[in-house]
Length: 178
Length: 143
Image 1 (cartoon, rainbow over the protein chains, first blue to last red):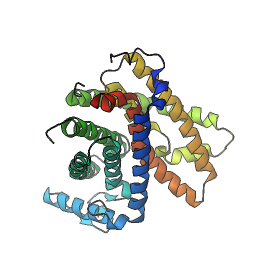
Image 2 (image 1 turned 30 degrees about the vertical axis):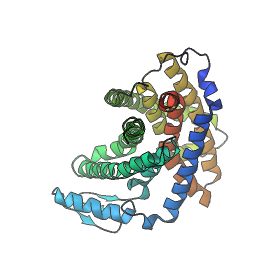
Image 3 (image 1 turned 135 degrees about the horizontal axis):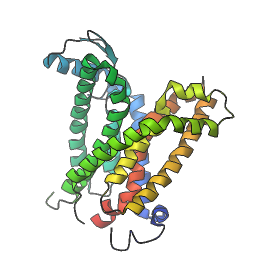
């Protein structure tokens, strides 16, 4: 980067003195903590992103695409294995993370609302796709299930949040017509 | 400010993440040994480590490194510097968390510790640290 930024020595250590950065990080962590606490305390009241709803919707999607399954409250059983839906499977924390990124970023409230309104369904359907993919792996390639679940898809979620965030900044925040 | 080339960013991230995952997959057991020696005073650390790899910051570090590598408008020197700096930070975090994990065994703190590590550190920490590197593009020039 030009404009003297990349040439300045020790610029990484100067970042901490930037007020914009400090404000963003403060509000990001504050928002994250508040929503995180609320999501744990009132998990069963969160529409769509609670464990029971995720289990039922996933089971329905799998049935539609022709994968036989039996759904319990938080568990889906297939012919050769079963998966248990835990809180981390619901995508709620990813929603909290992207919402916090959007809320903490300096932008008008209208653009924040647009961003959050777009982020929630994006995360929801991406997460459903992830769970369907994992179910498919568990049935047909069970040896790969753990590796993909533990490693690849965690990275994918970090990327999704950051990617969506940059997308929102570029397409919504910087769009003067909105 | 020139707009981020999202496709370029996505491709670079995917490639970097794939390479880093492959590297870390082989390097990670040695990293565990280093950690184990670092906090050798706690005898049962080996058992704790082997039960659940998610306690360590392996995954957030991989995703953060991939984000840093994919970031446009930064020199290689800056990226390397930041990755090394972050690795040192993650090493300290790992040691701290392992110590808390050992000390909180059998208490309710352990449960919250797992939640905090799993949720905050796998997702939030990479975002915050990546933002530190890239804030100039995201905020300053946007204004």
